[in-house]
Length: 178
Image 1 (cartoon, helix red, strand yellow):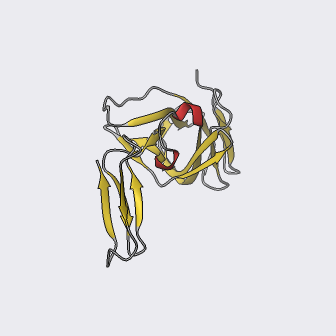
Image 2: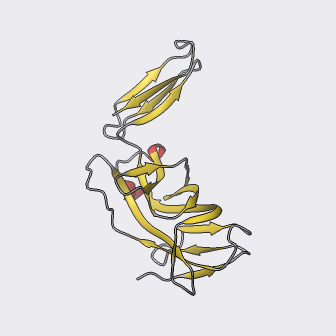
């Protein structure tokens, strides 16, 4: 059951009723009128076994009077999704991102991962509402590595990695682990 919260031009936040550490924050002046926001656990719509999804949330808003669904916002909101190290299991926390469901697959967003004890928080900003999830960036995961070298790990086999020593590359290259 979804429990909504009305947020207006002064901004505000709503937490999930199943996990108060999962929340969205709407800054002041992002909205031009009141909207009822909903945030709660949802089912993963993906049937692709290559997409590793930790938790899925439905994030939506509606006009409180007309009940019209609102998907595009007038500015950026912050989404913080929470999990724990034990829920992650063998998934590398460095490979986590918030992703949104585009109707076909999960699209990773620029995200910040924070670990506080056993709690794992994954933050992103967005201007639209959809299904969002904590995902492990897997198939097609790309990373830019340059003159200073670097490495990237596979999320399927944590022992598999690409390592590029310093001063091997003359310019930035994109590496992909599928």
